[in-house]
Amino acid sequence: MSEFILNVGKKGEIYTTKKIRDAIGLKENSKVIVKIKDGFIIVEPLPKIEELINKSNFVNKISLDELDEELE
Image (cartoon, rainbow, N blue to C red; front, side, top):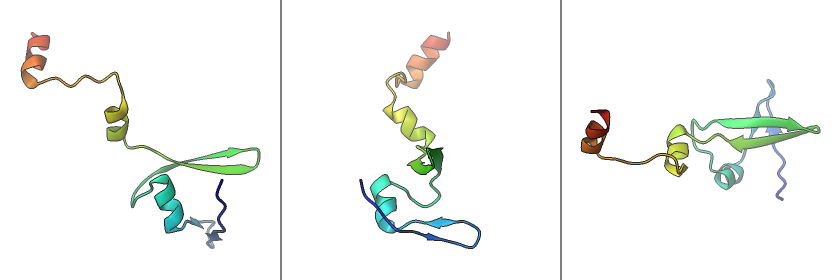
């Protein structure tokens, strides 16, 4: 487990470092899920819907012709 000291702004914003962003794959305009458990804050990147679709096994890729046949 890694530990970092971060700055907290006037309005409670927590500023991360590039090292942290790179470690968990955060990019500009990324979203995160924040959980509070036993007094600790857990920050996890929220995957984009495209990433979830690409990783899933339940989505089959078919051609437009195959789709037309299925819809008939």
